[in-house]
Image (cartoon, rainbow, N blue to C red; front, side, top):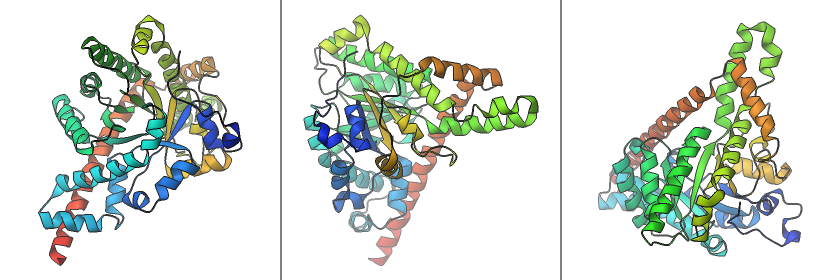
Length: 390
């Protein structure tokens, strides 16, 4: 399978820096964090250089924390209040400004990668997760508002999101498909991406510079399944040790099988026709890669999922931890048979992986929706206070 992203040839630069070494192994590091302060004070610009960052992701939870828990936006809110801007319109104005600024900071990365990296993600409202037409309308509006070629529109990989993803790709938009937890969901997303490319190609439109990632969530799978394993061990004491030994196995095994399927999909005659026309692979993006269980190594969900044509989006603490003591080596395509065996053992122990991943996607949509509503409420409250003090 051909790869799409460029990799540095300067071994001196990469040597000894685990974050830089990731790129030599084919993996891009994206930061899962954004707020106005780091855009304005030069901090993000410096992180791009020192951490070898190649993109940034945002979501309603991140914006809720940024806008609700800081004074970074007070001046902008004062200006919006003076115009009478309210609620979701105010949030969108603030978010678009931040995303546009971040796109400009990553533009050099984007240009050097010839459109294969250097992206900044902005999510459509999670309230549209089950609304195909609404998702398409908002995606197009946000794309026009940001007006940057290295923007990625973030769309949940729900049943309603799949046709929206296909159409957005056919129309030439960059798409970050989020909230994927299962190999089956990942397959549907890859198929939507390929169909979108095929539609675009059939219409005589260029495939170059149309990029997509499939955000496959990791640590949340272990958090959910580890709890189930502990309950099973309590009820079946005779199996206790064997069952508890499976903790921390599900997420990495699940992601490895998703990567194996990715390599199968992006090979063969169908893919080669599209690649010859300039198409890029839809890279798996490992999301939710901070370690939730303190008993596990704090960079386990980075170290065990390194490979070509992948992205790992990390919160700042995980970026710093991997830069300090991470080990960079190709791992995501290693011992895939062992990953299958781990999932088989989990099933034998009574774990229904499909049920878990379906529930996690539903909970993910609900969590982002709640964060979005709380953010709108917080922004509205700040606007009212600013207006009263003016």
